[in-house]
Structure formats: structure tokens, C-alpha cells
Length: 393
Ligand SMILES: *Cc1c(COP(=O)(O)O)cnc(C)c1O
Image (cartoon, rainbow, N blue to C red; front, top):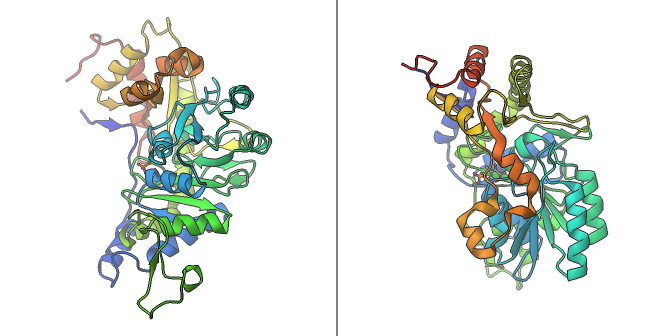
């Protein structure tokens, strides 16, 4: 039985050739490819600056540091995300809190955000940074979030790990029209890949400069930034405590090649989404919502199992799919359920009713460029066929 994963990278011959070219070149890291990849992403999303790093986790950490997140600060994000969206704040010594989601888009709810801000203002606990997450590739309502940012004085990092190639109000996600920094992930399950990798985009030269320095130990070679005149041409200075978060040229070459295919990949994801919408329309499932304001990149195709229908709950449908070799997943377990977060903050589940309800019912179906319509038909069959009524092997 052929196994179908929920997500998978798409690598073609030109991707492979690009990587081989680097392997045969003079630089495996810190050569010309990283800057060229940054330029390609900048041009694609229409943003001034980009800083490539070795993962979106590193990118989120650098973004928080560049915005001055430190002990005593609060950072808010969505509970329905990967743990990296909130861990980045903890790395900086700040505290994390979550904003409940919207039951339709599954993104951070703007109404819940506003209510929480009003309460926090009274308690003197306003966040320094809010990190909206574009779940499944669908942009959050960035204009409204940015208006709240101005009103309540917080900065914004978009966690766009799922949404390169997506659009909001006619602009590409990553343009930072309504945020300080946007973060992309190039992990193999995401839209495009560099094996491992991430990137920050921003229109702010100072933020770019800080992130650029921090990705490589906090070191500068620019005499203008130094505290004294250079001793000689070999001279560099470490100005802050940075990290080795660099992307290498092998990864960047793959990224450049993948960027050329991005629109095609997103188009293919939309075809898969359209076919699912068609074949699943009659089942008692809630299919992903699309929005007039934004074009999702469809990193994930998330369904909700409406209980008491299909004579099965989410767990049973999930098991039906898994025994059929369809490696579905759940995105995500609310971050505040994680033992580390529970021990540290003891969040009450009842503070996030929409996240709880979402988590009870969702399944991420397979979606990736090479998924065939036959594979999709198999997914539907598995959803409707009770276990035991089918021949498994
Ligand atoms: C994948 C992911 C990350 C982390 O990405 P890495 O590149 O693996 O570090 C962060 N946030 C979200 C929402 C993600 O899906």
C-alpha cells in the first residue's frame, strides 16, 4: 500500500543542478548564493531587506531580539501554531501569552486581541510584540492588527512560515506593509524548501542591520559601526552576543531555484484544494475557508469533522485515514497544552474556547504538488469507509 504523507517537498532537476553547481564552486557557505536568494525573495514580496538564516525558528528569535524583546516584556501569539512561534520570546527572557483564534479563519481573532489588549492595558501588561501566524497559508487580518499595534503600542512579527506565495490585499505576504518583520520557513514540508532554512523580511534598515549582525555572532566588519578605527584590513568587532544562524550557499542555491517555481507550486496547491472542495462537498465536514482579502498559499488543507455525522468522530476518521496509508496530521495541539508551557504558566484551557473547539475536530489532509487526483480520491474513500468494512492488505 502506497503511503501518502500530509506534506512533501517538490524537487526537480533544475533544483538538483543548482545545488551541484554550488558543490563544484569555491564557496559552500558565505559565497554569493545567500545574498542572491535574499534578493530573489525581496523582489518577489516587494520588500526592502531580507536576512536568510538556518531556520524559521532562528528567524523568529532574531526578529524578537531586533525588536528589543527582553526580560519583563510580554509577547503574544496564536495558540494554534508550532511551538517555535512562542518559544522565540522565551529565548529572549520574555513571557508569552496567547490570543484565542477566529473560528472561521483559524487565525488569531482580532476581536479577542482587542479585548485582551484592553484588559492588559488596565493591568499594565501590554505586549511589546504580537506574532500573528498565517495558519495554513491564509494571511491574518494584518490591517486591523496593525491598527491595534498603533493604538496600543506593540510591534508586529508575521510568522509566515506557511505562507510564502500567499497574498493579502493584493500584495505578497512578506511585503511588511502592516508589520515590522515577516518570517518564512523553508523546512521541507513548507511551500518551498532549502532543506532547513528561514528568512526575515523587513523595510527597516536598522532591524535588517541588527538581524544581519546577530545571525553571525554579533560581528561587524563595517568600519562605520566600529567603536574605534580598524587596526588593519583583518579587523572585525563583536558588538552584541550573536549566534551562528547562517544559511549556507548550498541551501541558498536550492532556495533560488525553488523561488523560480513558487508561483507554479502555489497554483498546483490551489488545484488540489479545488478538487478536494469538489469531492468532499457533500460530506459533513467543514472545509477550509477562503477570504476575499487574501489568497492562501494552501500549505495545509484543514478539515473539521462535524461530530455525530459520518457516524464517527475526529479520532475515528483520523484512524480510518492512517490505516489506509494516508499519513494525516493535526495542526496543531494548542501550544498551552504542552507540558513545558503548563508547568511554566499553568494556562487555563477555558480561556481559549475557540482553540479548544478547533483542536477537537481538525485533520490536515495531504496536500503537496505531486499529490494526484487518484490519491485524493483515496483520501475521500478512507474518510467515508468505516474501519473493518475494508480490505486493508
Ligand atoms: C515550521 C514552522 C516554524 C519553524 O520553522 P523551522 O524552519 O522548522 O524552524 C515556525 N512557525 C510555524 C508556524 C511553522 O509552521
